[in-house]
Amino acid sequence: MRPLFHPKLVNDPFGDPGLYVDCLFEKRALMFDLGDIRKLAPRKILRLSHIFVSHTHMDHFMGFDWLLRILLGREKVVHLYGPARFLEQVEHKLAAYTWNLVANYSTDFTLVVTEVQQEGLARTARFRCKTGFRRETEEDLSVVDGILIDEEMFRVRCILLDHKTPCLGFALEEKAHINIWKNYLAEMGLPTGPWLSELRQAVLRGEPDNSLFRVWWKENQQIRELHLSLGQLKSRILRIVPGQKISYITDLIYQPENVRKVVELVRGSDLLFIEAGFLQQDAGHAAARYHLTARQAGELAKTAAARNVVPFHFSPCYSGRETLLRDELAEYGPISPDVRPVSDASSHACMPTEP
Image 1 (cartoon, rainbow, N blue to C red):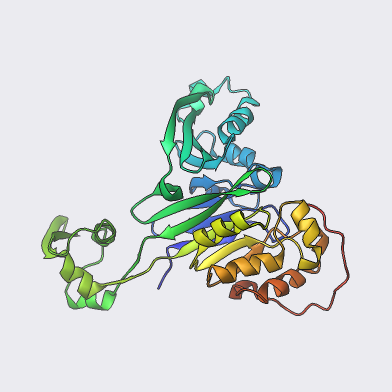
Image 2: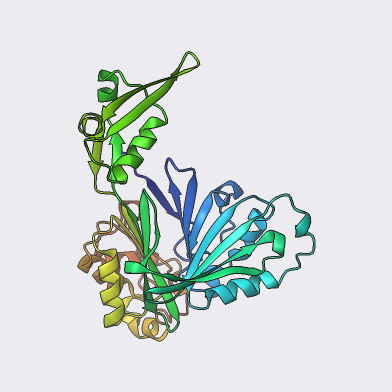
């Protein structure tokens, strides 16, 4: 079964945070955090439709300028989400440049920026290239159950966390995963084609089984079609299973309210990307910097019953000894197979610094 989402960290665990999620079948991608993204090929950046920023410390947001450089001059709309003051921060970044020539552009690249001001309340505005990226069409939004976007195929939820500054955690939830049984499709004498995507969408919309669905294809330069019940198609050619859930958690202190929110958001995640910056023996340094230890990350993953975990955002003081962090997390939670710990004999102490 081919998953809809293909997530990959942009940098190694010691590099700037950034999770790139390719969306199969949709010819687009999502991004969580926007640190140094220069490793991303321009063609990948051009696929981005929505970017979710946890907070605007430099290592989480410095890639904004590179994003702008690649997308400028394109006819494209990109949605950005961040915590309180995000609108002001994006506005100031845009105001730092001179836009005297953009009025002559044939395209109008647009940023739609939303800041989550507090639980349940957000504010959005647009910044258009042709107007020199002035703030426009500002309005308040309600955020119900933390849902930032809710599309036919998936939704993205957020929570507000304490990093001594507002910080967002995210969960990307596929509503259902629908595969096509091509052998049964052939048995029914039905061709492949765009109608299969339309069928997926009809199922995800919850249309009734007794409704008629149009199956169509091109044959000899003509459109052929027939109508079958949605229930018949679902039972014969579709396999419907629970969708993927990918969560992204970084930069928070280990305290009861943060723990409660994280566990509730990421519960049952198929893949949990979570910071694990320090060893438990250095928990005091982690707390002073409002970060998690590897053990704390593992405990969160275990409590939330996350199926696989990818740790990242390691403090540079563990350079060359990252398996110590992975091993500590693995004692309390499952490590994703693609980042399975390996043997590391080094065990010297360090004085952690801010990741």
